[in-house]
Amino acid sequence: MKEQELNDRVWALMEPHLPGKAGDPGRTGQDNRLFMEAIFWLARTDAHWRALPAHFGK
Image (tube, rainbow, N blue to C red; front, top):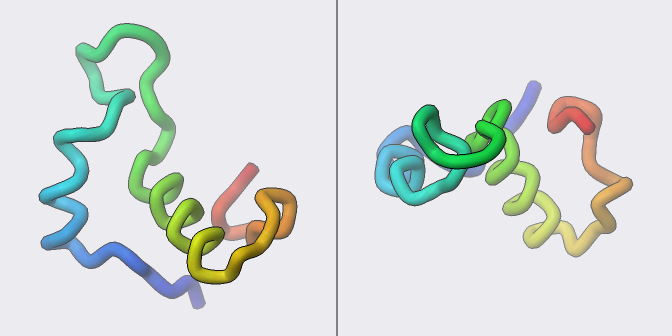
């Protein structure tokens, strides 16, 4: 089971400030929340990017 670092309240505060939304220039993000979860996992575990668990994707 995947643990979730960002609860819905915190995510609602962060989401509007991240790039990749519809209407932003350039490419849109596939899943900004999952990306941020991966960043927090890396910071918490001090692991390398290549060590990310599969549920975070590639």
